[in-house]
Length: 402
Ligand code: 8QM
Image (cartoon, rainbow, N blue to C red; front, top):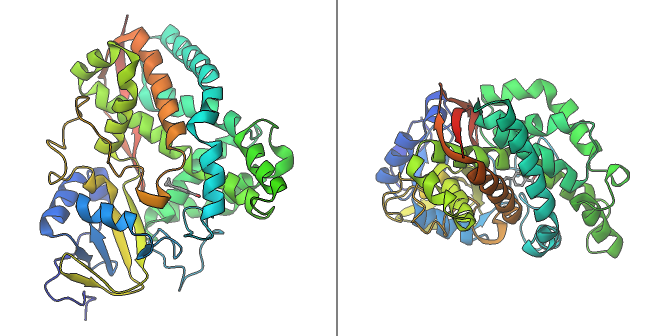
């Protein structure tokens, strides 16, 4: 007998959302998911799924019913040993979640970031100057979207030079590992031990510069706000969550502008729109596409009874394009107010690094807006497939200088 939901009229899908075709273009599957109903049972993985904004938003808000502590991937920590020590933030709930969250929220908050804005702007100018000096055709992924975060973020955390090349591959594997054990996970498996050791080495107190986010996390341990055992894992959260996400967030906004030339003109009218543009791109592209939750009790959603202890796959990207919530969701539109999107999640787990991401994005966008009158796609674009991320491998562009 094939696995089936308890409620007999729950819509069932046999599509694999982690298959090659869906990862290449998830939009048709997500539209079908939303149309099928508020909750759909995914036969292949024996899990439930939500693709509509209202239910995704409500579930993210109700952390008591939809817990994170059993893991936010397909694997249920009640039955399977996690492949790495769980994150103290992402894979925890109150009360354990609260102290690490409070510390990061302060260290990564808007007040603290003001300290970094000036030097990041100078770094962005140098990066863009050097790039444009070489020519007006380049790859917006490697030359901008990856280059900028890799130039500033490791320094901001305060990690050593050695091992920085492992940040993106480690993140890529972590985000694959939230999904099923498919070929994307198998591809990463041979390097797991080496990459994990490299990242762990960068979280140690004695390798961190005295002024970075990392040292500030260790200072919280000195004050007794967290334990010394917790500190390196919280540094690890920054290194895991802060690189691939921002790279693909920047790639998303650059792709959106390259394919919507009129919007670039609006951005050039002044720096005020760069933040809206980034959030609209996070809504539009949703670099983090999905996360699971686990039910802590029987719960009825839209007529479907989801029993206690079950995994639910939340489609953030689908919720962010739900026509029930957004007018013309398929249009990248700077006139829209994108706030309320769930691209950073929602509720107590909502991205604690979102101010860092926004500052990185607005810095590079404002720098580009001063130098470039237009950008366009200039060759074949290539997606990078990942079980969780909507990512780019290559975005060849041509720009016109101001
Ligand atoms: C995703 O390790 C972590 O704490 C962590 C890893 C990945 C994320 C968040 C936190 C959502 C960006």
